[in-house]
Image (cartoon, rainbow, N blue to C red):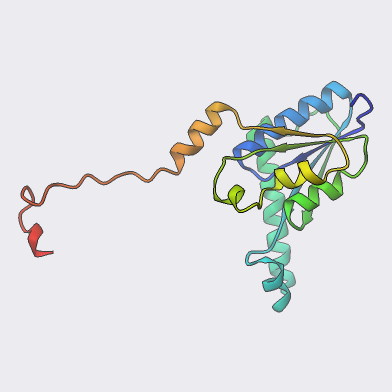
Length: 176
């Protein structure tokens, strides 16, 4: 991997992708390579729904929202745009896995992707990282989220339990 000219980072704002962005920025610095960040987007409801009733205004809105998420990822992951790197930001329409593989199409590229938590999406086989690892034509680095990131992301999704008083302690509970 010493001849790497371009380092691609798949970014979408998740904790794993922010970790991948940090790793990709460090690799680009170490290798004196260009950093290309890629965010893939698909219209809500998928391409089929959008093709049934195309709307250029909504399409532009969705693309702009994806671009804003990309710039937010720089702020959250790196504290802003690094001044010491040559950066190119790509906003591409399509599913994340195929988009990343198509962008990083040269054997001299390095593709850095974040891995997410295990869950339903992974069980259903719709993981962009798995797609990239299986289909990329260049070296791929799969960066797991840090332990701290993993811990905080689990806590965000836990619903707070409501304290329920026993029926005997609550007058009128039997009336419900």
